[in-house]
Image (cartoon, rainbow, N blue to C red; front, top):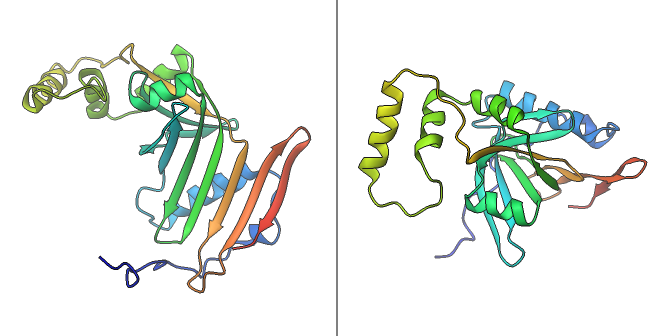
Length: 211
């Protein structure tokens, strides 16, 4: 099917983004500002991001929820035996891409990934909804599914107990430490604005990039 008439870049390109002309020294400041602004503007699911990982031979990607940005780290959680969990155990490096259609903004962040401590993972898990915690306990993420009704029944039964739902041993929090970040704002005439930050031994190197 021809794609030349597919609608693209339909969001708001009129945002005032002074960071492109006067970049702050710390890109995580920009990252936090963009997410806060997206939430205030009513962007749908501003903390959803595409996480790309590799096992060293093939690359896989999926959309995850970024739970927290704290102390220079981007935090998320998953089952350690899921595909992304196995990838990160073998090749502890990943890339995250946020894209907001409403505001034509994109952020790409890449860097090394490390598993959080048990205490940190407990705190991250406790921040999930009760339903999400129950699903994480019952599901064996990425394993073959034999009976969906049985799986749902297990979640329903666990929720019915009203007991505290603790983090299962196979679930952990992960931390991505940004080493390379790019902030992008799209324009209909394709003269997109791009701002790149690369970590160095002395801080951050900031570069404006051509579209």
